[in-house]
Image 1 (cartoon, rainbow, N blue to C red):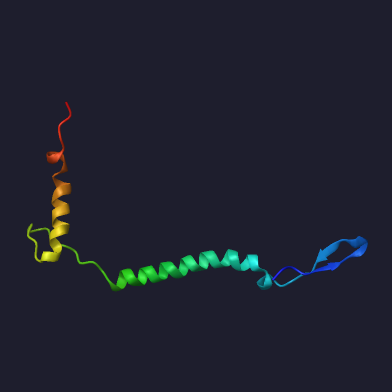
Image 2 (cartoon, rainbow, N blue to C red):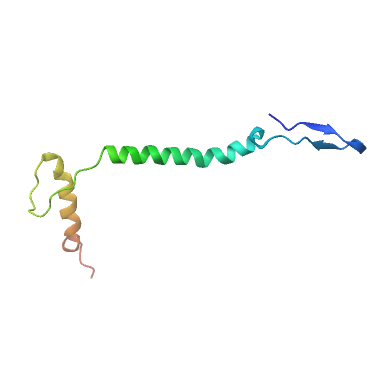
Length: 88
């Protein structure tokens, strides 16, 4: 909805005082942060509801087949210095 103007003296138009909630720019400014807040609450809810299990690495054994990729990456990262080629 565009701003309504009323002709004033001298042929110039003056804007009519409209309430703030009727201006589209206000809702554009409020809408962006409001969407981000709602999205962060949804993301936090998903993260709390579906928590990833912590791997027990104290024994160095994998308990389930699903844990094997995580253990492989952990071991690869721990031995990165030994696997890096030596610079000459």
